[in-house]
Image 1 (cartoon, rainbow, N blue to C red):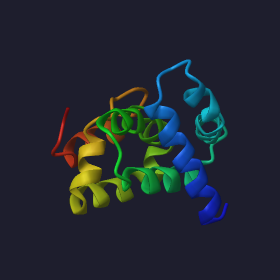
Image 2: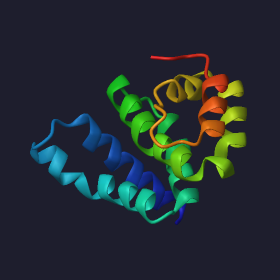
Image 3: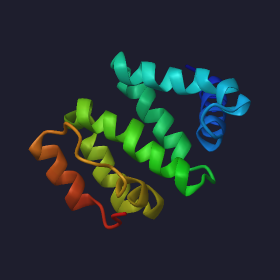
Amino acid sequence: MDETELNRIVDAWIAGQEAEDGTSEYEAHWWATNQVMDWELEGEAELLWRFILRTYKRNISDRVIAILAAGPLEDLLSKHGLTYIDRVEQLAEEDEKFNWLLGGVWRSSMPDEIWGRVQAARREVW
């Protein structure tokens, strides 16, 4: 997936998350939410990681940050934690905004080792 297409998905996903459920704005952007969920379900971890990296850097509301943390990032760590935890720890150390995002991740179905490392990496907890 090229950067233009990824940016289009990020823009639409953010707009959909900002919209109230059931509104025409929400429905118009549902395709992007569905795409991100497909990446989660189909094991497209690298696309999901790229999406997370692109999205959290935007000027997004606390609502969208919470959804990004408790949805895509939490799912990535639950299903692919061993592959991504080193990157997550490094980014959490270097980037205050990412650390804030990591603070919104819940344990879900993360293995003990991954959850322990997530907890140790985050300075910000909601």
